[in-house]
Amino acid sequence: SLPTESCWEFAARGGLDGALFPWGDEFNPNGEHLANTWQGIFPSSNSLEDGWYGTCPVDAFPANGYGLHNVVGNIWEWCADWFSVEHPLTPKMIDPIGPSDGDAKVQKGGSFLCHISYCARYRPAARVGVSPDSTSSNVGFRCMYNPDSTISG
Image 1 (cartoon, rainbow, N blue to C red):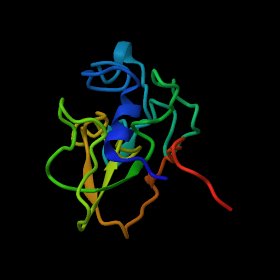
Image 2 (cartoon, one colour):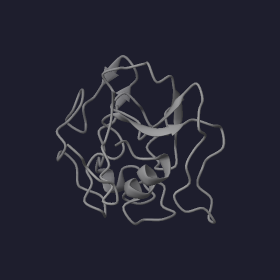
Image 3 (cartoon, rainbow, N blue to C red):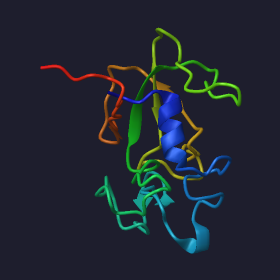
C-alpha cells in the first residue's frame, strides 16, 4: 500500500530527527550532490552536475540511515493521506492519519524538476497537495509493507 504521510516522513528521515534533509542540514555538503535535482537555470538549462537529466536509477545516490534510496529528489511520491494545510506531525502524535476525504492527495520528496532556489521540497517535512487524477513524468510512488496486514488469495 501507499504509506501515510507520517510513515513516509519517518522513513525519509532515516533516523535523523530534526535535520533539514535525509543526510543532514546542508543541501550539497562539500559540494556533493546527494539527490537528483535540477542544477543550473530552471527551466532552460540543466547543468547536470548530479549526472542526471531525468529520473535516475534507484541506487544513483547513497541510501539514508534506513537503507532507502532517493527519498527526496528524483520523483514526487504519492502518500495515502488526503492533503490538509495542517501538517499532521506533532511531537505528541504517533502515526497520525490525515483527513478522511478531500480534493488533493499528499505528495512528498520533490523531483528532478525542482531547483533549490524555488522548490525547497527536498526536506522530509515538505509537502504539496495534488489532485489524485493528475500525473507527470516526475511523479511516482513508493510502496509500504505492513507486516500486521494479511495477504489473501
